[in-house]
Length: 463
Image 1 (cartoon, rainbow, N blue to C red):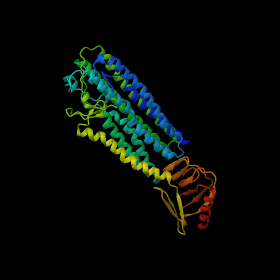
Image 2: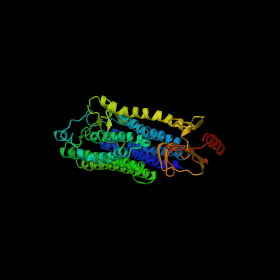
Image 3: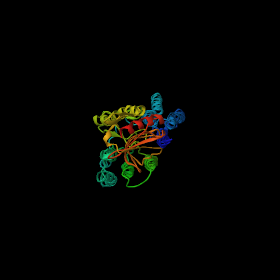
Image 4: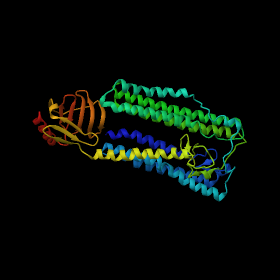
C-alpha cells in the first residue's frame, strides 16, 4: 500500500513531539515547566514527584499519539489517509504536545505560591553595556545565505529553460518556494539574532560567551534548515523535468533525511546551549535570576507590556524564539500563522475530500466527448480522434498535473509509450481505453469491465 509511504512522516512527527515534551522535564536556569524556582526548591520532594508524574503522563500521551496515528496506514482511500495525517499532525503538534506541560505549569505555579518560592525581582533586568553591543551581531555573515538561495534558483531556471505547458504550474511553484526560502532566512535566520539579550550573571564575560554561542548556534541551525530545504527543492525539480531519472521514492527518502538532519541540529543546539549554561553558571557566584512568571501564560505564551521586544526566547520546545503577544508585531506574527494555515488547510481539506468522494463521469455526444471531475474537467472534439484501442496494461513515468493514488489516476500524466496523456482510470480495473488524439492521448476506463466496454463501443461508433 502506498499509504505506508506516509509512515515515515508519522514516525518523525511522533519522535519530535515526544522529545519536545520530554525536554520540559529538565530544569533550565532554575525554570521548570515554565515556572522559575529557587535552587533549593528544585530538590523538593513535591517538585521531584511532579517531574516523575510528568514523565509518566508524556509516556501515556505518546501512546495515545501513536494509536491515533496508526489508522494512516490502513485507510483504504489514499487521499483520505493524507488528509487524516495532516489533521492528526496539526492536532498533535499544535495542541496535544502542550497539554501535559500546561497541566504541570499550573500545578507548579500553585505549589510555588503556597510555598512562597519567589526569587529575584519581578521585572526585566537591565542589560550591561558589553552585552548591548551583541544585539545586532550576526555570527554567520549574510553572504552565506546565498548558498541555499543560489541552489533554489536552479529549479526556477530549469522550469523556464525547459518550459512545458503541462508543467506550467511548476514555474509558479518555483517562485513561491523561493519566496518561502527568503522568508525562512529573513524571519528565521535574521530574527533569531535579534532576540532580546539574556542576562545570566553580573559577570560580563559569561553573559558575552553564552549570548554569542546561542546566536551562533541558532544561525547555524537556520542555515542548515535553508540548505536542506533548497536541496530537496532542487532534487524534486530535477526529477520532474527528467534531468535525472530516479524514482519519486528517492525524493521521499531525501526529504526524510533532510527532516532528520534538521531535527538533530535543533536538538544539538538546544542541548549545547543548556550544557554550556550549566557548565559556566555552576562555577559562577554572581548568577542573576529574574522571576517574570507572571508574563508567561501557561508557561509558553509570553505577554509583557513592559517589554518592547516582539520576540523572546521560549520556555517550551526547541523553537528559536516565541512572540510577545503584548506587542502589535508579536500578535500579528503569532496569529497570522494560524490564520494562513486555516485559510489554506480548510478549503484544501474539503476540496480534496470532494475529489476523493467523486467519480469521473464521461459524456458522449455527436460532436464532442467531455469528462466531468472537480478541477480536471476535459473536453475534445470527435473530429480529433485518430485511433481507439483497448489495452490491459498502462503505466506512467510522471504526473505533471493531476492526482495519482492506489485506486485511480486523474489529470495530466506522461507515459513512456504514449507521451502526454489525459488520464481518467481506475488502476485495478482492466481494460483501459486508449484514444489517440491529434496532440495527445486520452486514457479512460470505468470501475467494471462491462462499463468500460460500453464506453468503448460508444466511442468506436464515433470513429
